[in-house]
Every structure is written in structure tokens, then in C-alpha cells.
Amino acid sequence: MSTAVKPKHIGRNISRIRELKGMKQEALAMAIGVTQQTVSNIEASENVDEEKLNQIAEALEVTVEAIKNFSEEAVFNYFNTFNDAVSNSSFGQGANNNYDCTFNPLDKVVELYERLVQAEKDKVEYLEKLLNGK
Image (cartoon, rainbow, N blue to C red; front, side, top):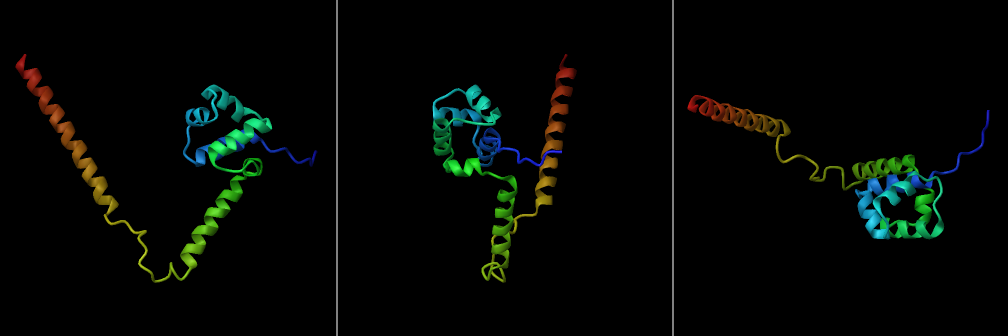
């Protein structure tokens, strides 16, 4: 059984950072002057040449080191720590935070279903008129 450390998969790191930033492959391709298929191939590659990596880092607005050392766990830890810090700070205690909904989500769901039911009734009525008209 080998205990060797598996090398980082640079392409997968690029893909995850791109996804976290809400960027499509096409947008990254345009930013670095290649096709979407080339970006797909880069993201499937374990290693990426330094020049291309520099271009990608610039397009993603991160450092090359951030791509090379990217870790899902670190991202989640960062966000968890950030959220914990906000909720535990004096700002978060007793302050009027605007994290609460200003509407009842269930009311919105009911409203949506009522509109869908009404649309179906309108459809049925229209189809009955067509059927009776013939």
C-alpha cells in the first residue's frame, strides 16, 4: 500500500474555482483567447503549462498559487469561519441584521401554485371553447 502524496490536479482546481466564481467555460475561453473545448481539455489535465496557468489565473482574478494550492476543505472552512465570526461578533448580537425574509416563503409558494392552477383552468377553458366551436 503506497503512502505517496497524490499530486494536485491543476485542471480540476481551475474548474472548481471557475465554478465558484460563477463563470462558464465559454467566458474563460474568451478571456484567455482559446475555444471552449480547449478550456475543457485544460480542466481535464492534471498539469497545465505555466504561461497558460498565468493567463487563467489573471482571467479568474486569483493567483497562480491559489490555483495550485486550491482545496475544497479550505474554501468551506473559510466560509464557515467567516459566518461564525459574523454571528459571534458584537455586530451579530442584538443588532438588527437584515438576514430575515421580509415575506413569508410559504405565502409565495401558495401564490405560485394559485397562479399555476389558474393558468391550467384558463387552458382548459380555452380548449373547451375550441372543442365546442368545431
